[in-house]
Length: 410
Image 1: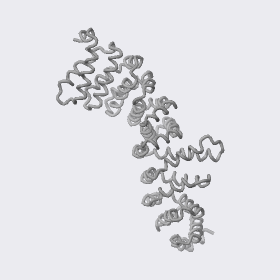
Image 2 (image 1 turned 90 degrees about the vertical axis):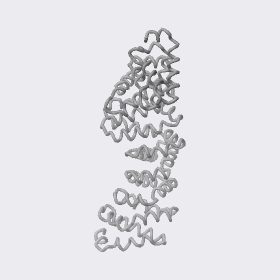
Image 3 (image 1 turned 30 degrees about the vertical axis):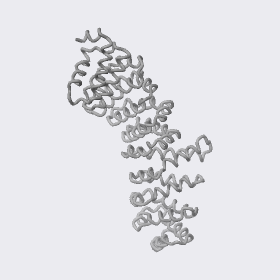
Image 4 (image 1 turned 180 degrees about the vertical axis):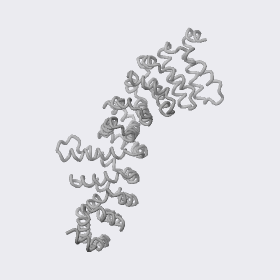
């Protein structure tokens, strides 16, 4: 019966009825339009062109408590959401807020599944993705995951997977860094880690290491780095083996991935002695770091590699880690880092060298390393910041604890 309805232009006649205030009229008109247009892309495109999207969002807003109307409305959105024209039209409405409200209200699996299907489609659009995050979709998804965690029923398992997949998809675009920034407000960020988002991201990373999808690796690492900012998250992520799993990406030869990988590891090590120890006693990691410290064609990778090397020493302060860095020939890179044009990097290097020298003065071959000459230049240069000069003098004081060491360098 679809064909004669279409040929008779019945859809065009029904569309104005979506502006009615009679709920029965809205319900039956919506059902009729949905059934006639189902699986007909041309007709669906026509619906979008004549403005059906604004009518659907209005119904979802004005009749949010009406279960039958909401059900029909969500089915309609589900059928249209795959169209780029529909996504564009929806991005100019407040549909994100309304869908998040419905997600909070949803009590049965069928309703949750329909909403998840709509959200997954909308999350492919950058503007709608931002709107969904701003509307707090991640908080509602976290609540759902917490509520259903540990349930073994098949329906619950499907919902948990859908919610997890949706959270992960929120990170997968060039906007991932921007999207995670709002989550960096500790509450949401911590909840995301508590409900297991980290493992979803890591599974994704490991899968795409093999396929070589750099955009996915880059996005997931950006998300991980931002999620590692709160201290409590660092602890949990380390306990769950995040650092070890990330290191599987060390074989990557793609500079964008290397850059994010190094930034993520540095964020995990920040203030965490245990993390710094794990990283500082991994020969493969240290050797890779030293290679990256010398890379010529990507300044970002070179800078992050040096910063991570300094961070490992600064945050662990153990003789074993200092010795491992020395054996990997990393000390010379810390010395070179003191000549960086950025004061922050100079200070990080000077602090790391001061700690290393206090632990083991034997790590320096001063003539070969040119450390004394570098410190001399820093102290003479009028452009050197007061903090860098202070840290340079602190390092000199540490070195002066060994008269033989200094004499042998003259």
